[in-house]
Length: 392
Image 1: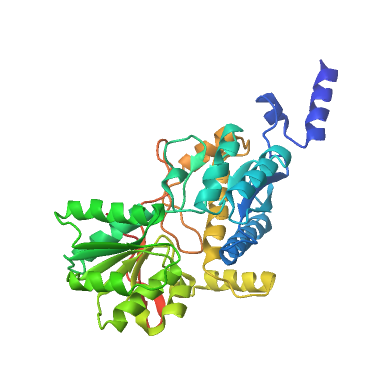
Image 2: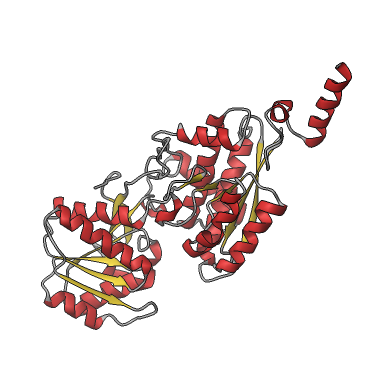
């Protein structure tokens, strides 16, 4: 019996896992006594590589901070990054490598709606948690899946909070909408209509544009003629700036309201003075809107020292997602398994970290971190926060 026990302990040591893990049915993929291996895929060479590279950098900076503080229950985190090129086919290949060859414990903050949707079942079918995907899409948390947790507040939730704010606080009653003619834009349209029903209102005017359009003269003219007192935008960066500039060219100083897709400092750079007064909801404060506390200042200085470049807003989600993983793993306890990680995340309540983002709460049947967002406004050439997190 003593010999069997010694052999059993030796086997555990050779595998680099605790005897407790073997006793519970074998080692957990990606977890040893000294390390937790995590995977992600980002756009590092495709059309949104500027965002993907900063998201990756934020994740790695958080890994450095976690490990410098002793890791999680003595385990250091190691992050394996693959390039998805913002291409669903490449995302599938990257996920297969991470899950089947590298054998990561979880996928964290994978970037992109189409890329994550195309690849997520590879992880879920292998019992590898899909955590905090980098897309404000509903599928990150619904339909319910035990090991799928969403962090990015969906566009619909942000839009509904923004419309309520415009009704309650800005006194708006004549809502119009300009949206991109695709599923992302339609999400904004549906959410706007849903929230207006709550206020016994309907859209005064609606108009759309094809992806890639740069001339919005007819759409803005149509909204102006309808007498809208606010225009909800289902637009991304360039198109947001274009819509605001066109309205000002037509001598129309109407308020416009966007969401996270347009809450980006690049919008202000592109739109210039025309962006002054623009409203947008966002689940995170932009770097320009953050109070420069000693902790935030030190964190951003670590970023500059590590990467020899200025941090951009994309690093926020990366940093927060990795720190949230560490919090869930801490609450999971020493014996880290998929089941204990799920239980740990379900214990997360009103959690925040150094970089301001809406407080995170999960539950036994709730896989979305939050339904609230900050209201931001462009003032003095930059986005500033004008509310705490709000919801509908």
